[in-house]
Image (cartoon, rainbow, N blue to C red; front, side):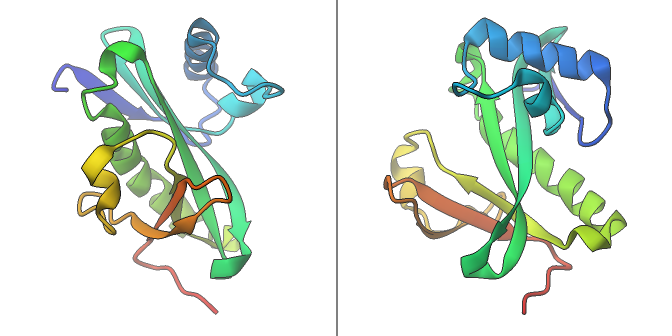
Length: 160
């Protein structure tokens, strides 16, 4: 991991970063059907590179979670196959938290209270831990498809 750099991308509207992410998704053919690559590129939070090669990206959409009465940045990670056993997804999520928290503080009208993920990958025993110490992501429930939903609140978060 020491030779991989993670750079912020949230709301930068950097065409070079967005183009690199689109090329990454296209090369791996990993965007869900019907997802517009240019629209997803506008949701970039962070990009991981090894030299000039994109190793992974984190994106987020701000969504209201009615059961929590809060708005969260729902973070998604995509990691290239050679890097999937390297903990890069965890590093992308951990790196995305302060980027999104800073943006939330700078944009209080967005009412962004934290981050959330829907766990897509099989993480074995790690998935059995209710709280992940590195990120604070806490298990709060499951999707109808049985996937874990985890959230981590920002320090400034307040709920009704």
